[in-house]
Length: 160
Image 1 (tube, rainbow, N blue to C red):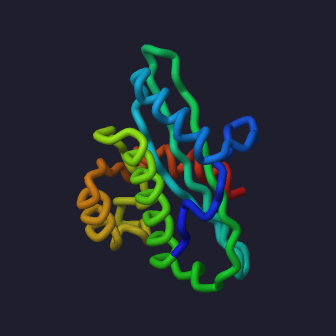
Image 2 (cartoon, one colour; image 1 turned 45 degrees about the horizontal axis):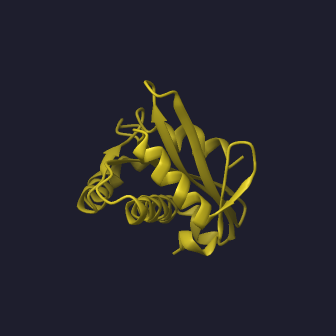
């Protein structure tokens, strides 16, 4: 499994790299100013390579806060062609990122967005019970498609 702390920096929407220490200060500030926190991961398989992008988004309409940071992992591992293995890694990264936020801002309510569909047509639907138990068991709120915008939109954009 990938460890989120193996990357020493987060990336801002503009592309600037922020070291973990600076990121932690920004997280505290954004949460203190009233931001809600949303975490999500998406991935894209290309041959034996898989690109994962984990996003931590901050939002508060009243205070005009809307920003995010992300980490990107490029891995060569044919196992990620297996949908269950890939989704498990996505959830693993999201939970790690959410736990990192809690380290610097204990008690923060965090919503974890997972790219799982609940419709009968979705191949990921069978994983819903396990993922729901995992995420809620870690103390986080869970959102799935179509409400999982942090993973389905922002993180997805960074896997391309």
